[in-house]
Length: 115
Length: 107
Image 1 (tube, each protein chain N blue to C red):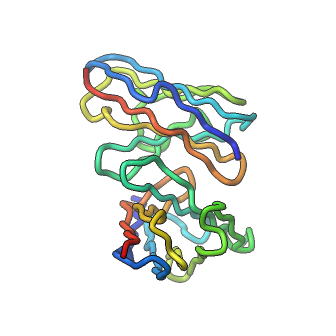
Image 2 (cartoon, rainbow over the protein chains, first blue to last red):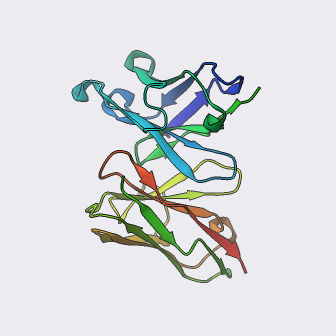
Image 3 (cartoon, rainbow over the protein chains, first blue to last red):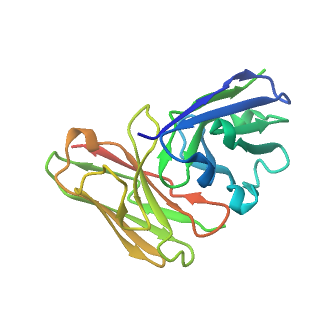
């Protein structure tokens, strides 16, 4: 069974940084492209970004709202995905989900940006 | 960006009913469309990809169709666990975009 478990959420002040992690199991992580998706309280789903696999040269794509502030990375030896979030804004407050693109989701981790 | 528009935004239905949700893309996305179910307070769950292919383990009461710009998700024989919010998502182009969601409520 596929499992994706996000950690690292919490309360951070505007302008601060936070790093989310996603530990995976049950599928061949290194073969897959991975995405981050977020959901602000009471709102719909918003795609954050993508990282491709080694065959895709680990290239990344980002939503305009986070480009230049967020960085997605991965460690295939640890079957793990990461989201480094810098210069956080109050509008970044959301549950952040790690996803195996179009196929599987983690349970999410809440990030709250507030003073 | 490709805009995804779902209709209706919400609907009320009874146990045993069949319901259909529509998703329209602002441009041709071929069959690069996924559907997700999100129960209250839970993470989304993948139901369908490639417009009509069921994810492993998803019951056949769920079905998807369409290509190009118009897509549908049909749920037959509604059961209490099917009352949830459903989202479509296009993966034909970046940025990936979602519909606004359709909330299926108990009548």
